[in-house]
Length: 357
Image 1 (cartoon, rainbow, N blue to C red):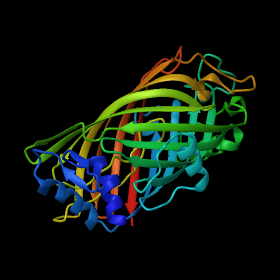
Image 2 (spheres, rainbow, N blue to C red):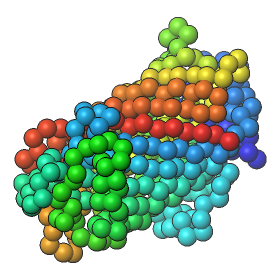
Image 3 (tube, helix red, strand yellow):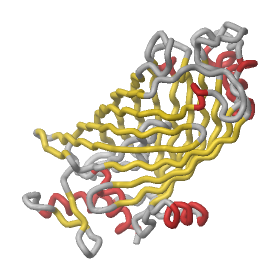
């Protein structure tokens, strides 16, 4: 069952050639693509004995623009296993209520993470009503990914807490004191109040809309749409990703990213002839934002807040390098202004390490 599930779920994610699902559930190549090309892709998946993938993602403006403001830091640990069955409560929520068709091709991932937001002047111990609030978000999530003939759907639920229990103040002060030797953040007395949070999210990707061979390299495009609803974030998004790398017919899904960025599973393989690989990627995603607690403030209590912008866009570019059982990736992200009065757009870096076993 595991090889078939790999082929169904991951072969469609990032196969270098257009593929389709037949009635039998196995892959069949569309003409004029030779059957041997599809077979090569499935053979790559079947040879891969690794089913578990653990990723650590770290995002910070210090590894982007070098500043210390706005979305200033995020860290997330993600575990992905193709054969892991979804929790019963998520099965009921997704399959019965949300209409998400859970079946043999459904895979499950788990994540825990923390995000930190600050105004521009972190040395100011007073209220800064014209700048974004101090805020932290500590969360855990579980997500399902499912394959149809032409696209990949993902459904997730995230639970967490905003405010002092998020430990954002403790984390930032520890990092500034012991790791980066940055100025002490002085305004955490004005952070958002404690509030439990929930986000239901859904996204759809079309991984094989564009797939072309350029000499010994492959070029692939992947459009996407998404939405999220909850007291933390509510938005609708759309965008696309373009990847370029050696045409080794190996399965390479994009690295995990911290939401609201479009995120891959972290799955990867290496060519049979060598134990390393690489690819370049770039993309753009826009979001129509109805709710952002980190700008709008607390849902049920008066708190610091600013007037948010209702459309935000991210542009990104990066490099992923695989060696043996480990993949490293770096992404530079440009985010447009998120609220009225914001002086500069946000630029931050995202670094991730994925280990398979």
